[in-house]
Every structure is written in structure tokens, then in C-alpha cells.
Image (cartoon, rainbow, N blue to C red; front, side, top):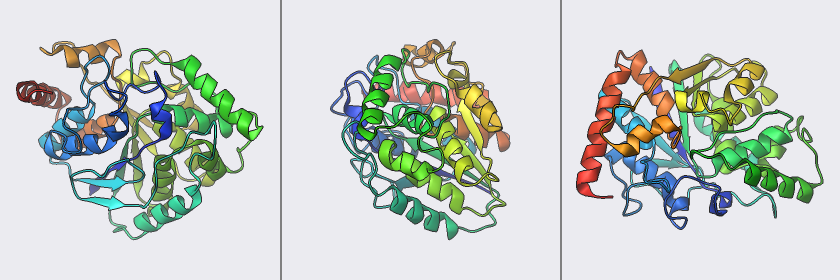
Length: 333
């Protein structure tokens, strides 16, 4: 049996102008993650009064996950780990607060406590679960991923939710955060939880603990892009024997601005790449996915893998995504 968990979180990093592509309105960005959970469960957000769109009007990849959930009957459990608002669906609460800006203070002061709480949570799960898929939604998460990768000495660049990766801005944030700490790359290679505490986000601490608390016979699938690659890197630092699968979309794998495949290869990880194709979509909001405007998130790639393992075709998920978006446009965003 396979179970699917969606971890929703938040970080002050997302409020830095020009950094996150998670919302058309910067004031709404912090509320994107609970809205994503709502979309996966209900098809439309209840946490906020508009559908999650990027600045160019493209829909959240939660719509792909929603399509896979419908087509394959995927059961989804939501874990709140520092989101600014709670989601509308039932959820598990870890007690984590949103992450801070690492340029000025510790990003996750209680990272070790979050890690242990999450480890306890998964440690009480039925060990008969064959596969556990773990997805995330946290605006600004690729930047915090870069911070911890740098801190533990993993080279490469993370991707971005938007078409243009704000690499210079991300580098500036690393410069400010490392200056605060007086460190260089690789400073926390032997203490990955310190990297999360000082530079990361509460989703990382939660997913890391949850993953390592699972029965060692359980297959772990991290559903995401470079954010999940960062968590996989942290995992291998803490337990060399745990090798998760990373499931993402072709939009991340083919992103020339990021080092997703290189990082996965360096860590010796198996990857799955969902071959989505919205080039024939009647909706520009979806067809623009092919131009790199939206790449991954909310477990889009993992949900396609889950569906395919149940015999559901990628084409049926594409068709359902188009159908869902047509309905959203009729309702009005």
C-alpha cells in the first residue's frame, strides 16, 4: 500500500520581492501553501478567496496533483508544519512556526524539536505501508534548499517556480546569511540539523524527521524538485543507508538553470521524471508550463508516479487537468 503526505509550510524568505513565483499578489504568497492543500482536496481554495496563480497568471501545480488524485483515487493526508494559515481539509499539526529570514536570525530555532516530533509521528505508522510519498508546498523553498545545500557542502544551483530563476538574488541571500554566521560552504557538513536550524525552513525539518522515522523497509518517495533533493542530501548525511526516490516533473529535470539531475546523481539517488505535456492545452495558463513558467510543487511529479503505478496513464491526468482548469476559469479566479 502507498500513502501520500502533503507537508505545507511557510518562511519569511518568501516575502522578499522578486524571489518567489508562488503568487501574483506578494501579500498572498504566505497563504499559498494552505490554499494548495485546499486545491488538492476540494479543487478550489478555501483558505483564501482566489485560486493560487503565479505573477503571470499560471495555475499552481496543485491542479495536476488534484487531477491525479481524482483519476487514481489517491488518498492524501495533510501535515501542517509552519504554514501561516491552517488548511481547510483535516490535517496533522506538528506545532512548527513559519521559518525566519536567515540573513538576520536563526531560520528554524526549534528545528531539532520539529525533527524529533516528526520522527515520532511517522514512527507510529503502520509498518506494512510499502511506499510513503512525501510532497511539499512552501513558497521560497528553493532558496532555503540552496542555503542548506551550500551549508552541507553540496554544489549546484536550485531551480525556481518561475520561468526566470532569480539566481543573483538567491546568491545575495546566501551571502547575507553566511556573513551573519561567519561560515563558508560546507561549514555544517557534519551537522545537517544545524544547517536547517540556521538556514533552512520548517518543512525541511519536518520531512527529514518524518522520513527517517519510517520503517527501514518502507520505500520513501520525495515528491518534488531541488527542494526534495536538498532533503535527500540531508537524509544521506544522517543515515547513509536511507536512499529515497525523488519524483519530479520534466520541467525541473530539463531546467538548464538548475542542477537537479547532477545533485541526484552525486547522491546516488533514483529519480522519476513525469513526462507531462500541456503543449496542446487550450488554456495558455497550462500550455505555458512547456515554456518553464511553472515547474513543480505540491507533489505534482510524485502524484503522476503514484497514478502510473496504479495503471493510470499520464494522458488521462493531462486531460483531467485541462478539464479542472476549464472549470476554474468558469468559476472565475
